[in-house]
Image (cartoon, rainbow, N blue to C red; front, side, top):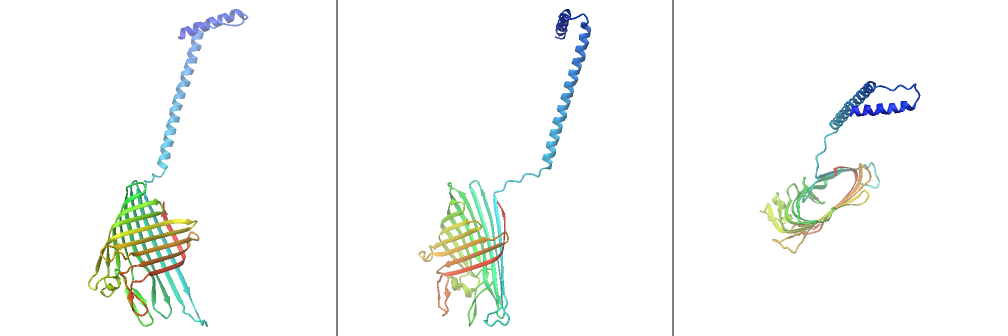
Length: 344
């Protein structure tokens, strides 16, 4: 190939020289061979340098990539938990000095914590909620009086049967932490304390979730116990004087809604209806909790919480001392500090 190239170049130069002036000198074959050798050496050298430069560039790119990967934080493991912690603290104080209109100086303090830990992956849901609330009012010249006392735990496990229907198992417990009294002008009467009463239920059924914020659970197999540790309080909660633990078995319907209805306005409500197969199933027990919160800013909120209970096993005395089942209602309006921790 090299020889053919040199011969071709020589013939071309000879033809050109024959048509040009005599001053043009035609290189010999040997000179053309040397020129070709020098040109080929330069081409080979350039090719070698290009290969070496390509290797260096590729090595630099790989080292830079490795360094960038090493500098990156490790990837987070996927989590299927959604956790929230709501804490509220409310305080009010009244001070009167020589106040002609009358009244008493007082201090009121209340706190509330609502913790949720929910798991959802594929066909499994696991929801947990713990609530604790306590508040008191101290009127100077009078004893400290409890205004709020709540200790509750709820847990539910569900397995998807269809797109919006789950088989579910739910556990619930609620009681109070401190002693509670009924105050009258003539007497102060103990009406509750920790585990007097304590209500616990275990429910098996189906959970229907048409929307992420709405849940309807029907449990035709629901067992419960009512614990009253103090003998003198047992009859008030439907237990016999010698019956520390009363058993219940029936059907339960629970409707729960948790939704932000307007910007910074959230409604969290739960209605529970229970029919006891063992004792007057026609008398439905009702438990309705409602919480409406308005988040003013990151640290301030206005909240209203209500609780409505009707249970014909619970006997409540009127002002004349007559005990009978009655509708129980509690309302707490609070304005104060509020902060929420959450991972979504």
